[in-house]
Length: 220
Ligand SMILES: *Cc1c(COP(=O)(O)O)cnc(C)c1O
View 1 (cartoon, rainbow, N blue to C red):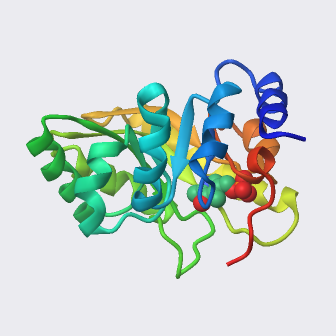
View 2 (spheres, rainbow, N blue to C red):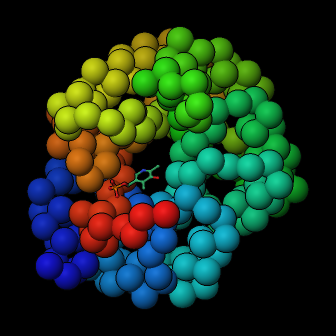
């Protein structure tokens, strides 16, 4: 199967209300371009440096989502390239994004990353801490919370991811109803190659797919 065929198949399968993010880490710009030519509208990157390289080839014809762990010293460049940052999990990183956006004269849509597996070493806030973080971010003028993102633990069977998606969904619904200022609970980003069908059943409207588009990644 070619990248083109993979993208067509996935797009055929998705309801129009669901956004496909092509998770492009470790892929060459040419591979990303092939996916874009097949209909991908959003590219997800984990590393700012890789994104810069890909951006030079693919450019503004797609939206760029940052889906990796963002370091403070990379925020300035990230603000230049990305249209959304899906992985905000602290007020410190939010404040840095806000500061850089204010200087650049833009407002960054962000998602709050939820550590739904409550894994100590993982990025994201615990589900019960999401609302407090969103209230803090609401005071920042150049950043706008647009939803939630989660990875979930990577171990186990596909079906094992369901409870993590369910919990993230319930946080999403609860915060949506709380009508906090400067926030819109619009996007729920969950599900990857092995889990996106379950994520869709549990209410995801953004899915992030790598291997099923580009093939298996080399280890390392
Ligand atoms: C790599 C990655 C994906 C896609 O993973 P696949 O299993 O290759 O589909 C999705 N989200 C994030 C944050 C990733 O780092």
